[in-house]
Length: 213
Image 1 (cartoon, helix red, strand yellow):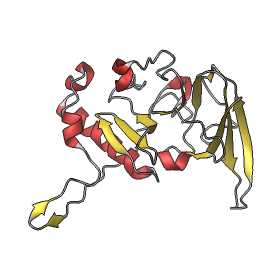
Image 2 (cartoon, one colour):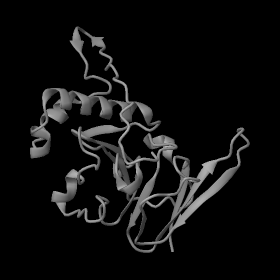
Image 3 (cartoon, one colour):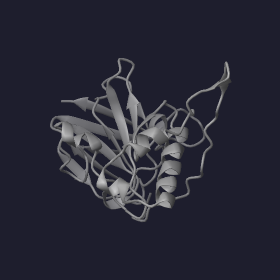
Image 4 (tube, one colour):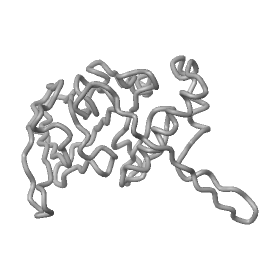
């Protein structure tokens, strides 16, 4: 998003319940057990209303993405590759905050020292100045491009970080009119960042290519 103010236009979603042999299945979208087991002080300090607001934002992120995501923390949705490895993580800011907190797995040896973007990752941000939701990736899409719609942030990128060496990224926008053409937006260098992609490129990224030089 263009401004640094987080836009909370995310609507609530309703988890569908199915009955099989008289037993209720797990809700299809929301994962309250995951959220309730998140004991980070910042999460525990949230009011009941704020926790509900955060859960609605998480549900909306899951619903918006074409690729199946799994809620893995009160404010995180993880996307896995076909072989079960972590491919991407959406990290949402907490209610009342403008910057998404550090990735929960930093305790497992993954540092998060550049605008919240973990070491060896590259990240796209919803707002300028690295604010709003953060989508972080580790895999280099050498060959097929990555599509933002798969992870719920099509036309939602305003800033970025490449916190790894030897990785280059090219961002594209789908040309209007359904022509199948793609318009170049920007190219990143290893270990680089941008606090704002500029008025011309703001909220336009639809896909990206990443490769190791």
